Image (cartoon, rainbow, N blue to C red):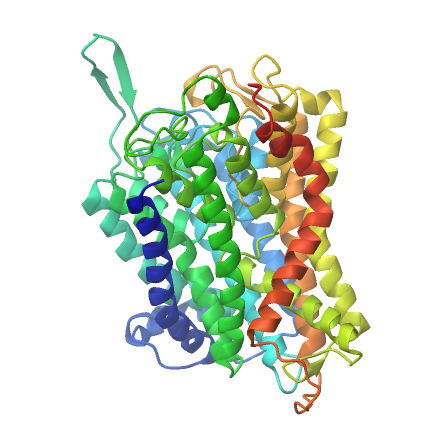
Length: 590
């Protein structure tokens, strides 16, 4: 551990908060019809899109109509992406497949399509050896935009349901989506992509380069439109890399400055949405309370991970590798980490992308220490409530807020109320189902994979066995269920002996199970969140009384953290014991 490492962590927290507050104010204006600085730029394109889609933005939708529009739009996007990826060679005439890559197998394409549609970006393939430029841009990058937009509009719809004073309308899905893309994602992404290019990220359509090193061996260097995809990959908490090594690759993450900027870009919209909620609810303290909850849990994860990685593993200590100073790390665990970013930059990046649905990585998570590797497990076990994905984090933690209000109301013997609206049996049933869907999907798929021969075929037992093999399997389905996309490595669904998918084949069990895992765990909670919004939208507001439990003070923050930890611990702790925890308590190398 170093002073510079701790300075990086706390400077990051301060800047995140500083930038998120004004962005939250701006987003509140976007979704409440307020004036924004981009009205004159995007007003005409916005109205044109309404005409093309035949949408009346003044016509509100109840939760069922909102959900129907969302599902239809997502299904159309899935079919289009699957078609693009399965016909990759047909688009050679565009000149955007200079390597003439073939299409991947149908089962891998099914998994990839489900992955990018659900904001997961789980990748069984290496981008630079599998995908053409056209597939990367017209297929994957477009879904990065749309899946991020869907997450945000669901959060906005739930907020409207909570703060609504009359009627059943949650807004208009098409209007919310168009305004999200034009007014929120586009300005941020364009500016961010230009900064990445300035720092050294590439943005071209050139053929791959072949170079010869000092040893005389040849090496192929991938090219492509990287910066544009990298920007929305991070701002939209998508996480899928243009290159196989993701944000450890210098073309995706060239400098220490871009590493810091990438971490900020992952959390800026999820954090801003919380402040947006405070403004839309008419009580900014509500937003501050939720933000404090997220930040406390976030800092706890960062501190544990950084200390564990700086200390090293028991096996490293037994081998005498804990002494000496390496890059200012005082002999910590640098295995699988980029020297450019060090232990602090890698640990912070790992936590940032696993508390969200981003999943981008700048180091190898499977090479973290047992305790350091348990942190991303714990982050994913919180089911995207520690900031979470764009939109996903806000509507997920609001479900926990309603659950905490219900539990708190039972403790004091009063009918639970939140912002003046009574939380009754119907709402709490929907909340409970929305919260438990993700853990159910992750644990069911893990059990099925570890108990079946077809599932064990995805683990290379010559490399991983015991708790490491279980960790790789569990993390794969936990990551996919949480729409995160990061991997503990080792668990595969794609065998690719040659670049361009020639002669490759997928592991059908892992591809199909993972695809269904991602889709079910994405859309079932969305439907329950919208149902909760619909149930609350028409409720009458009662004035606060002397016995009303406050939800904007430190006491409620403690209660909310306790509920989140309790649900996560009861659900996942036995599985964590079988994998990273037992591995962290032994000196044996698995």
